[in-house]
Every structure is written in structure tokens, then in C-alpha cells.
Image 1 (cartoon, rainbow, N blue to C red):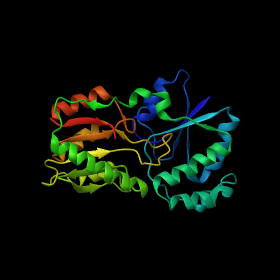
Image 2 (cartoon, helix red, strand yellow):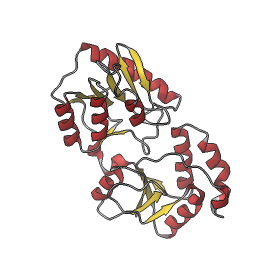
Image 3 (cartoon, rainbow, N blue to C red):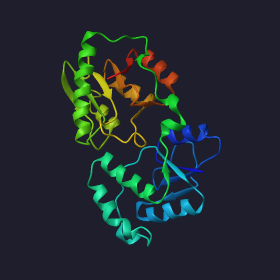
Length: 262
């Protein structure tokens, strides 16, 4: 039996719809998924109890899906099952996202719970390589995409972010803790986005079972509002929610969507 450890957004609901048996849905308090009612909510301070309860309920696998922000830890809310995990949890909160998530994965795995990747449940969320939009890429986009892949790789090595915006070989914006939407929003209303492209990829050493990058309609809308020429995503490394709708939105906004093989 599988449990979804859910955050915000559409991904948890999409995965739940693909499963033959309805999963148990546990969401971090304050980060309910869109269109999916959690069976339970938990806090980081009760993580140990969550793991124990899942095992007692016959759960054998967990799948992490959806967006969360780093919660503040309230020492007074810690329960007995979580207190032994506090040193690891506090250390994880000081790490980059990938390192922190690996710590969380290890806690579940050490309890005997298998980790199932979202792409194992819905492999079609990883689109095939190619230019999927009506608008095509030009020579300057190809050189900027190569440069963006180098920049994103460095960001990933530092465990900082998964995306960037590049124009004429120069980085206009880099993703950090506030996330992709914040990064793109900083360009809206400025002149900097014209002729630029948005690039997103998984981190070089990322555990693909968790936190694989995602784009959707809102990403396309922000790219268009920022005046960028298009979106480039790493083939096999970025999930697209509702691909048909995303391609249609890209065409309507006259931006390109390129699934690029590195």
C-alpha cells in the first residue's frame, strides 16, 4: 500500500488519479494539495509519529509530491517519537534542498518504507525530446540554452536551485530559495526579458525519486509576462503538468517550448 506525502499544487492529485488503489494522503500542515483531500495532516515536529503510524496502517511505500516551504520548528510541539530525530532534522534545515530532502528520505527508508518516484506512477509527465511549440528556436537560443545548462549545473552542484534566465550568454536571473515563480516575477515589468530564455533542469546529483522539477501553465504565463522568448527544459529531468495545455498556452503566447537533451 502506498502513501502520498503531499505538498501544494496539482501533482499529488494527478498521481492519485493514476493509481489503481486510492493512496493514503498525508500533507504537511499548511500545504494542502490542490483538488485532493488529505487523510491526515502532520507537522515536522511529529514526523516520527507519522512514520510509525504509516507502518502500523500497512503502508509499505511512500511517494513525495508537491511543493512545500521550509517550516519553522516549534520545540514545544515535538512529540516523543520525533525527539530522537531532532539533530538530523535541525541539521537538514541548514542544508540545501537536495541534501535536506535526502535526509528526510533516509528517515523513511530506515523505517522500512520504500520510496516510489512520481515518474514511476506517471512516466508520461516526462515529455519526449523536441521542440513542442509552433514557435521554433533560433541560433541564439541554442547557444543561450547551452550556456544556461552550464549555469544551472553549477547552481545544482551548489544545491541552490534548478533554473535560470539567460540572454546573449549572460545570466539575468538565478533560482534560489524563493523558487522559480519568484525568480520569473523579478523580471516582469522590466526590459530585461526580451530575447531571453528560461531554462530548468534537475540538479546533477539529484535523487530523482523526490523533488524532480515541474513546470505547468503558470510557468508559461510568467515566462510570457516577463517577455522571454521561450522555455527550455531538460529531457528526462523536468515534469510537465498537462502537457497539451502547456503547449497550447505556449503557442497562444508565442513562446517556444523546447525539451532539450543535454
